[in-house]
Image (tube, rainbow, N blue to C red):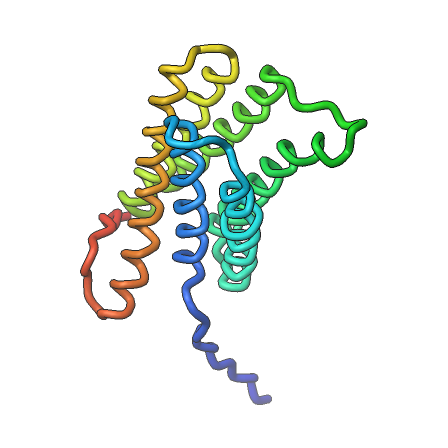
Length: 197
């Protein structure tokens, strides 16, 4: 009786992580420039939230699912829908008069749940890279700072929170671009701080 032989199939698909990281990072920077007081909440931020922060991250997450990457699938799909839901929170009351705007304490609860989720995901980055630890660690801090702001901590904390969010977004942009440049070069151009397991 002949045993069936199986040949491993080589994964030739592209790495979707840079797309997800850049979608998250660039949108986070632009929103937090608003939080830091540089400009008002505007259509540019909402469009980035819908398109790049939202839709592109969901696409990246689905691509990570195909690669069998549970962490990245969970992260990108979740944060993609975070951006889509955030835009919906802002826009829905304006286009459907019967929907009440979200009160600050409800928005604080929303942000707290995302903070808890992010803090647990941060623990997962201990198995990945230092760069992702910085992204998820600073994002955890950002969510809880935003909770304090929504509960009335004051304008000065809101501006500080904006700068912390800019740092978080830039960390994600760095991580995404580093993956692209390192892959193209076949060597480490921008270090990510690989974790030894």
